[in-house]
Image 1 (cartoon, rainbow, N blue to C red):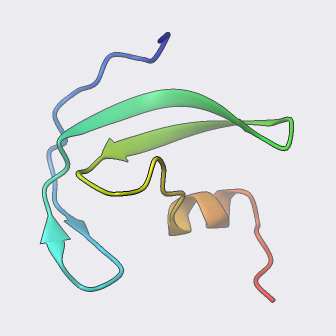
Image 2 (cartoon, one colour):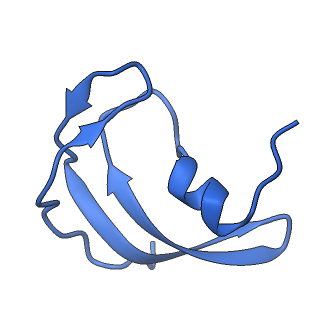
Length: 67
């Protein structure tokens, strides 16, 4: 698939609903396009029903406006 090689994540994540979980892997330098704009992410792989979650660090990096 052309993805960077996953690595072990040396930390736990606190999810939005306050549960703590250990990521299955960490993928650095993942390139994604959102509306033809390239973003390079550090992505945590977690067991989830969603295909991808772009959390608060991504929102901060792209200076997303909440309204």
